[in-house]
Length: 365
Image 1 (cartoon, rainbow, N blue to C red):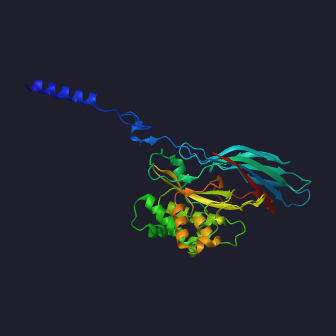
Image 2: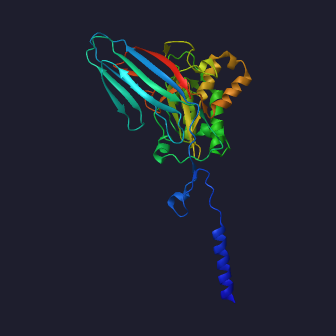
Image 3: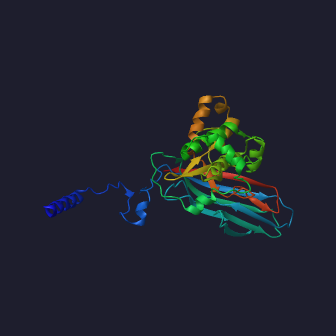
């Protein structure tokens, strides 16, 4: 009797297994059970942007040096961020014209790509024309898509570390904890940090290059928050790292007018423009990957755009938009964190120079 009951039970289990519905993947990679990859969360295929804007950008740099003086120029090249998870900037063509000896250099520690030009006993003042064809698409954070593959562990560790400009110390940690208080969720924590940085920071309109020094130690010690875009975004990055959230600054410059505020882009209908630097930030949350933020844009608009500064509704709307959105009227260069920030061209020996920008939108997909 027991043997027959055992056989009947086994038959029912086998029948139930055969009738079990297959896993509905819905374009999600679901590894077979038992493999090492089955312990990873499901990963959805990336959705490519449909609103690509294409630009031709030309930069002309001229140094003011003495006759027959040697000079070296280091200029950071545009970032090619066409990753499977978040494609938002593509470099389609890159070329340069100069009578200097030129080479491309890539830094192993931060991936910064630089064009290095050297003039020896130049008869004419050193000059470089750098041209690029670029495709960019607005970045939007989608809270419903928590299906991205994990970031590499070495990249996350690097974006948690202290640097000379971002001192992740006890002072920064205590400040960050006082802001997030009892909030546990990393997404909510960074939202609290983002709003606090905007409320406390003042954009300095007197800065020559609009980006600041990027040194956050002085802000933490003096409790006078703000400066240029690199200072404000750097404050957010430091506070996020201080509570264990990977974050980084992204350096670049505007290439087109903004639809949000005249302060957040180039001047319309201008053939030649100065290099208008702007630094943004992003932080990492598992599943969502890197999330864009732009606290410096809100502070910049509040300081330079009277329509935003005088209207609480407009300021609050821009503040909400800045968490999880980048308007891509901007060219990203790199994530470089060092003594000389990653977005500044440098002549050695140090000389004065001019930098003119010509940016033309060719078409939109």
